[in-house]
Length: 506
Image 1 (cartoon, helix red, strand yellow):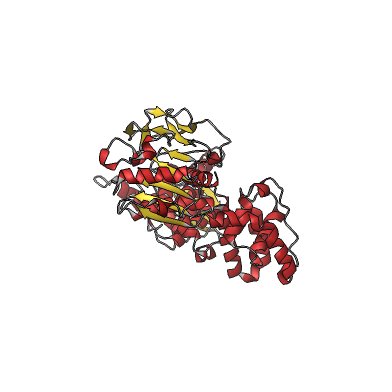
Image 2 (cartoon, rainbow, N blue to C red; image 1 turned 60 degrees about the horizontal axis):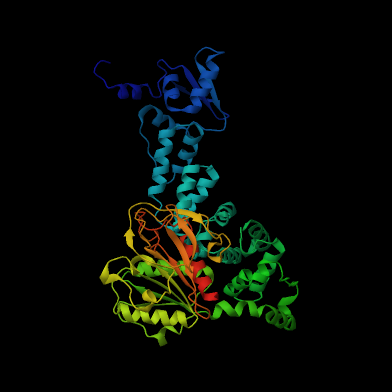
């Protein structure tokens, strides 16, 4: 055998009785495959333990029984152990992954996971892989598919046919995920859509689903969730109206007692009574109009920030691009609050700043992102009275970047903007402003890990609206996958939606 590569020599031992010292016995028919101890021990944690255990008490050949496996099902595994070659295909990848995981064949397991991840090119494929990862209890595949789900949750869960492709256990894992960009009520609604699609399982599916949804907004008791479900079912309120009831302070404090709705479907009098009783809780937010005021050319940026704003339950969002022309005060007064960010120059930065100042002075709220409104780059800066007449919590100095920043001290844990906020990662680029002047009347709600203000608010005087400054660029890495912008699996969307909710209600 001189001159023959060692790997080729090992391959020649495959399926040969020559020098074999292990017998693998498969299935009830006791089919025998001859193998070699050193090959199995080198490549498999499972076989290493079993052979070393038997070695203490018995002489070769060592007999290892695998009664739950057939000889054919294990053939690809043995081929890989001897030749380091595998034929991974769509129809065998999950069986190979299961076996390689069971027998501790790490190299083959990695090949299988990589094959799965390379094929994760659609929403339905992601859910199929998630389902397989759950059934196999495979942590790496589960982690990667959940990350994809978190980044694409809005598009995935807006398609009820996607949920139709997967089993109940997978839906349970999705609903228990706290990092999705879809609100709890929306998940509840998608579950109901699937329930309708599989109507022969209506009652059982509804009960199972309601018991597992982690509704932080509706998390009182199962009976309350069922009552809210019935309010939707009998079409007393829309799904968004139900969300407003769930968000209302009286509901969260347990002051709203939901009625018995068993016989409500055919009782118009009861329907009217309930409409009158709960109507006040749904009128408010439905009437709010939010303006997304931008100075940018990137439509992906606008869509990404709009999705974050929608988390607070306000769906009447319109946008105006201040690079094309400056909206008049009359235009702005059509809205209850404004969310503003930019990344290019304004059509008229002075007039834009003056109109924003008048808007806030009228009692309406403004959320501004510091990047690039005031960053020392003259052509991009916002000007006018909003910058010069003490409306803002702080004024900018130099723009900082490429030094990753995360959430640091929270100075007011009870502030409405901080509700549900536990982590924030500004991303690899981490654009923010180092303020050179903080207004003594401002409240710094939270800081970065280096002590720089992250979230600040100010109300100039009684009768004026609140201004919130968010010291980061509001677009997430859901738009750019290179991790430059804030990380989607952290709470940037909640910071944005909570901020617009706060200034709208104050």
